Image 1 (cartoon, rainbow, N blue to C red):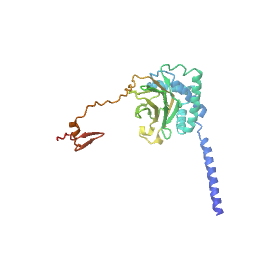
Image 2 (tube, rainbow, N blue to C red):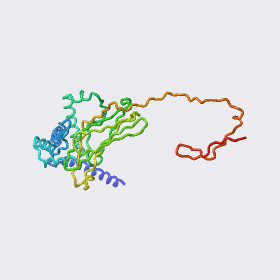
Image 3 (cartoon, rainbow, N blue to C red):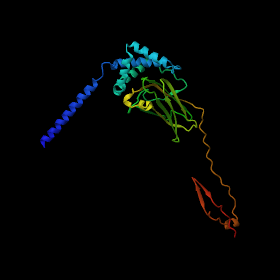
Image 4 (cartoon, one colour):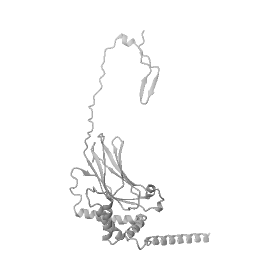
Length: 311
C-alpha cells in the first residue's frame, strides 16, 4: 500500500515539473523574428493614431490611402512587412499577450487625450451615459469573438429619448476577412425590446441610432459586438487563414430628447349608470340564459341573444 502511494506521489511530482517546464517554454517561445511586446505596442500606437487622425473619415473606403498610412508607420519603426505579418500571426494566436499590450496602449492613448483636453466640451446637446470600458478587443476565435455590455438607466433617460452609439473600429489584418456586427437594444418600461444592428466591414467610425418612438419609457440600454470567424467567411479551415483582430475604442453612448411625447394620462372618472324606476311588468319579466357560447381568443360571442319571455 505504501509503495502504491509512493508511486502516485512520484507521478504527481513529475507531472507538476513537466507542466512548469512547459509554461516556461511557452513564455520563451516567441520567435526572434517577431516584435517583442514593447515594439509591438509602439507600432500599434502609431497605427491607431494614423487611422483615426481624420475626424470625419470620409475617405475611409479608400483602401490605398489607409495602406499608405500603415506603410509609413512601419517605415518609421524600421519594421518590414514580413516582420509585421509574422508578428500579427503570433500575437493574434496568443490573445493574452496581445491583451496585455492593448491595456498599456489604451492607457497611453487615454492619458494623452486627457492631457490634450479631450472629452471636455465636446458634447453640448447630448449626454454620454456610457459606463463600461471604452476600449474592447475582438478576435475571430472563441472565447474572444463577443463582447456584451449593459447600462442601467434608472432616471437618466426620459420617455421618447433617442440613443446613439458611436465607436471607432480598426481591423488589424488585411489578409483575413472583415465582419463585425454591432447590436444596440432598448428594454422599455412595458418590457418590450427594440433592437438595431449594423455590420462593420471597414476600419473607421461607426454610428448606430435607436429611439423610444412611442415614448413608453426606457428601463435599460444594452448591446454587443460580435466578430465572425475568418474561416466561416472565407470557407477555409481555421488553421489555414490568418486570424483577424478588431480594435474598438472611443465608445460613446449619448442620448437626446426625441420628437415623440408620452401620451397624457386620462382622468379617472366613475362610471355612472343611468337608473330608471322599476315597474311591476319589469319585475315579473325574466331573461333566458344564452344557449351557447363561442370563444374567440379573449372575446366571447353569444350565439343567441337573450329573449324576453312573455307571460
